[in-house]
Image 1 (cartoon, rainbow over the protein chains, first blue to last red):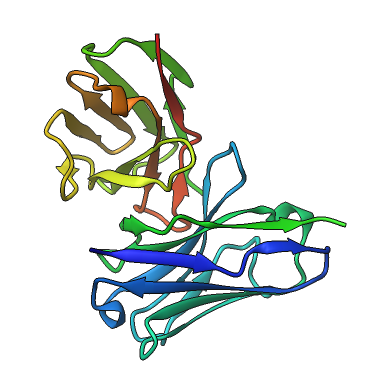
Image 2 (image 1 turned 135 degrees about the horizontal axis):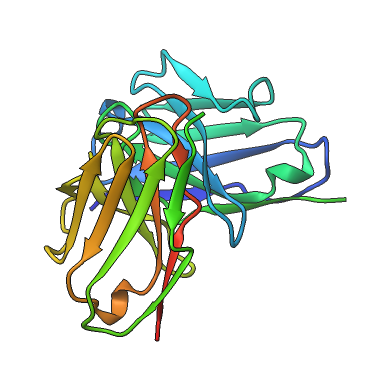
Length: 119
Length: 107
């Protein structure tokens, strides 16, 4: 069974940093592209970032480019999202998502971790 | 950026009824349109990909159709567990985008 378990969320002040982790199990992690998608509670879904299966290529939404960094450790089956210079508008539930096609087909989602940016 | 507009915003129906949800794209996305279901407190679940392909484990009462700019998700006979929020998502152009959602509620 595919499992994606996020951790690392919490309350942080504007300008602060957080590192999210996503532990993957039940599938061959190193063969899948992975993404982060976020959702403001009660609102819609927004794609944040992606990383190629071997970690060689990354991509970011304009709203987080230059502030967030996606990475992965295939030996540890773990996906990361380093979030710096956090803003109030980054407050959301962050989902770790598996891509079954290599091009934005999101077939498995974690339960999400809540990031709250507030003073 | 391609904007996806879902309609209606809210739909009130009873179990056993048939329903059709709409997703319209501001520009053509070919057949690169997916549908997701999200129940309260849960993560989204992939239902349909590439407009008409059911994802693994999705019941046959869910079907998708359309291409270009107009897409529909049909649920042939509503089960109690189907009352949720449904999102469409396009991957036909970057950045990928999601619709704002249709809330399906019990009448």
